[in-house]
Length: 254
Ligand SMILES: [Zn+2]
Image (cartoon, rainbow, N blue to C red; front, top):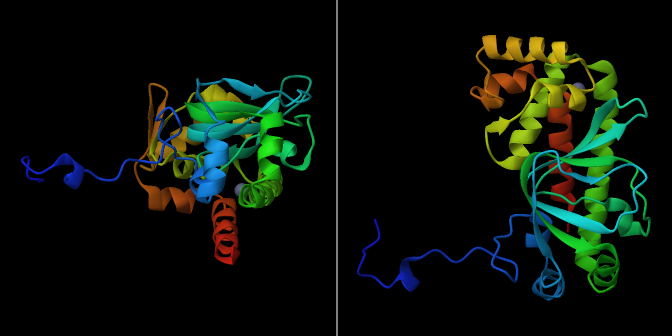
């Protein structure tokens, strides 16, 4: 324990990196920026809370703002006119929402919705455009993240078609836990069914199977991972494939 008589200045850990209003920054793209680009961008960020099921954009919307998720989890869904949807991407503090803006596009092709409540840093699309012109590192990081999302969407397209719901549910729980940095998450079966593009009854059966095998607990709308190693074994191979590809790319960044 620290000696209480010692100066707090000497015994306290360094303060977390924060925005102009003192909100701690967890987003990894923001944290990875060089000081000059941080200075330019951070003063223009607006800290926003994202309640569960808050929609950031719908397909066809004009993108007026972009988001750097800070805590929580945002799901990217393909939505059909009859209301059916399936998840094609999952973004947490490692990423960015509204990638079309990075290359000058303005319309959203998908729905982005907060699946686990949290916070984000918002920036207006015109402001982002101006910042990007002066921020080569930020532009590069967003282009790289765009490739990660493309890889993820490609893998999930195959996964949604070929893999069974048990394996997909286990894969989804692991991906979510990685992005929020926690083994427990609030979830409803209705939401999971929308995400996995399946019937609610199938999710009930799949969650029950994982629970009976001792991999998760699921009660009162909260899922807890209690045996991660076995959950990895139960997950379809897509979890490992995506993880290895991201690690390989991270090793290639100069
Ligand atoms: Zn899969």
